[in-house]
Image (cartoon, rainbow, N blue to C red; front, side, top):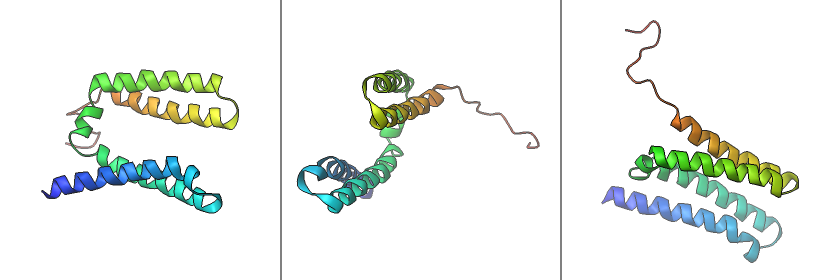
Length: 121
């Protein structure tokens, strides 16, 4: 029961953070809008990273077909953003999507299990 309660709480916090970061501009103005947006982004990042470390999301995100999709799709979106979106917004979108693509690409690299470091037995 504790695990279910923790999972539900994390998902609610993640969705609340996403909602705050997206919808703050329609409800608030000025400094309050910026605080709600950045606070929502921070909440979504923290709760989302905690959700991604839990099963079954962890095993889903580490599956090879999912990693290939994330690598190719985010790489294509990064290239599109670099060309189609102008200015600093396009550069930042391309960099962000490129980092996600690189992260998935590194997940596709084979891992060496069972090898020991030099000096260790």
